[in-house]
Length: 316
Length: 273
Image 1 (cartoon, rainbow over the protein chains, first blue to last red):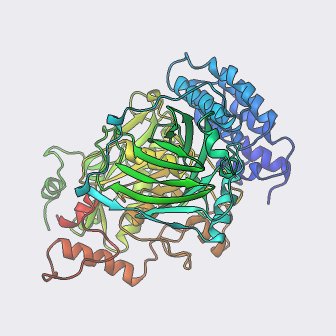
Image 2: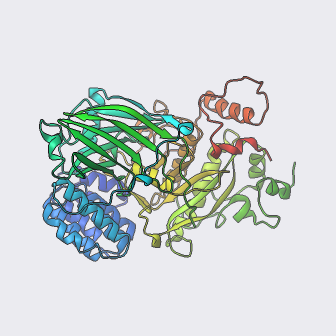
Image 3: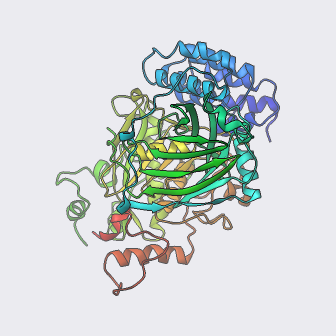
């Protein structure tokens, strides 16, 4: 057990009793009123390595306060690109709608800052259901089906109450600014991977489906069960935006903001008939999910993944 | 015993090879002066390594993530830690006569590529990293990253193996080479098909945080890097190796349920130099 000052020192790298990463985790869960300032001092310290500054910026993205938001905006402005990109992704998770303007200032930057800014702004726009900051929807040709000869089953069921509580408790550490619907949660298992779909509670209410035809929304978070610790982290963020008449475009980037799944949903009364496919990109595995969503109840009619990933480049 | 040159040929090394760089796959030989922790290997044994590659052995494609454009980490400590972690993993698996054969460590992902993979945010990003790069299917992909974000008050992730079991990501832990080596060996255990054995803190497949708690080890102390494998785990490895080598595997014999012989990353099992 570290005293408050010792923990702050450990985060700043001045006390090696606890590794810095662990110290940051402890600080996040502490009641230290200075935790944002301590993390901000690391992220803004030009003498620190880019990685340690990124760790602090990522940690600030787990604190949903205006102070964290302000610090992240500052870091995005002043830090080197790799750190700024992490700060922007964090801003996308905890930022208010007023933050979008400052994020937009980074869209013209070089990569990886520009991509992180586009994703962060889109995330906020979907969370606050704003009409701006659409992400591009892939063409149908970029969404191949799972070849029948290369198909692996995906087991679909519901979590237990206990697992649902564990998932929702874990996601409290990963603020995305939406309240998640309680159990039962839908679970998809493929090999050793377990994903749990957590719906935005606001969109499970009567009449909510029709609003998807009018405004974009953060429809759900998908949680991946960690293999090396007890817990879950966000693996996909399911975004919806009005498309054509009666239809909603669905995009599900990975946790990093990289495009991953896309599809559409036809809205009929309270029911969404949805279809999702993996975007054809290097390293991606084909995935097909069809089903319905009605008043918070997900019914999967088809779930399959490909056994073979698309070829990816070699590192240098 | 086969000559060193014959063993090198069996491992696919060029006829003119360097013992340290090619036969072991290290950037520099021990002692690694910047690694001051107890139990960090201080010497290499050619004889031991030659013996191990005549046993079932796995190959590694080591990918260093977050290097400078010249392919090296900015801090030489990190380069030494990669080598020491692999040597620790070699020492761990040597306990059960399983070798780590060829280690190709020239792969790298420079910081300038802007991938963000030098700092892993969570398991999802680790999966993304493993899937983002293909490597020859004659070895296991082992990515070394510089940092791993921790948002938990009680447990931080330092390694991850993907669902395909063809690759893993390991954090180069500051000042903790033994922990890094143990994490690599643990993740390789997953690639081999083993799950967690959290009831036994001395088993390599016990999660690090659980083992520390059970052993009463504080966060600044190290878990011993040994396999502590149960007999059935050893037999599973040997059995699958024998099966794939065509030894003692009569037609119709069921494939071991733990190890997946169709995993290309485990092609090492066919080879005994």
